[in-house]
Length: 122
Image (cartoon, rainbow, N blue to C red; front, side):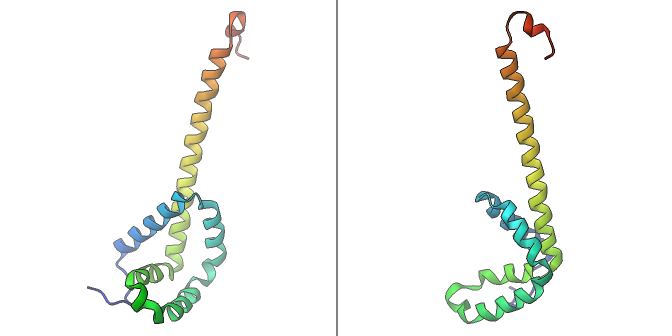
C-alpha cells in the first residue's frame, strides 16, 4: 500500500484522468472544464501544493481518497492529458452529431419530395 503523499503509478494516473473526464462529461461541463484547465495549467504545481496544505488537516475526516487526485494533477503533463481527452471526446461527439443531422436531413428531404421534385438534386 502506498503512502498518502506518494505519487500514484502511471496506470493509476491514467485511470484517474479518465475517471475525471467521464465525470466532467456526465455533467456536460467539458467546455467550462477546458477553459478552466487551460487557465490554471501554469499554476498547477503551486495550486496542488496549496491544496495539500489546506486539505491536510481534514484528511482524517474525509479520507485519503483525494490525495491521488492532487498528486496526479499537480503535474502539468497530466492536466494537459485531461484537456486532450476532453477535446478528443468533444470532437468525437461533434462528428457523431453532424452525421446524425445529415442522416435526418436526408430522410426528411426524401420524405418531402414528391412528383418531379424528387428527380432534381435541389
